[in-house]
Length: 89
Image 1 (cartoon, rainbow, N blue to C red):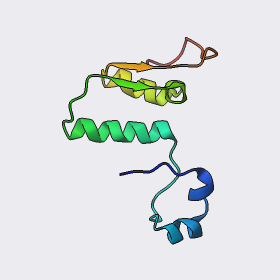
Image 2: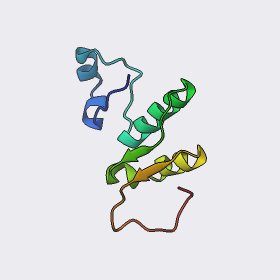
Image 3: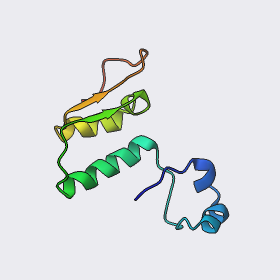
Image 4: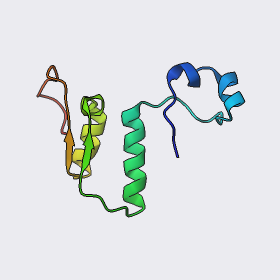
């Protein structure tokens, strides 16, 4: 239901209107969109065993914390430079 739109799009409301993007659609990162999709899947009772993603998602502390908090099984790639100390997840 949600499409990733770069900030260059969401910051250009005229362009969004011309493309049929509603005014209430704001910029969201891909990990933020993933959390929203996972929340909807959980609310709708969608069955899944794992969440798997690349390092673009794996470096996002909010996504990792969400997965940890929801007790979801996950495998996320992380960049080698990612610190190992930090919030849960």
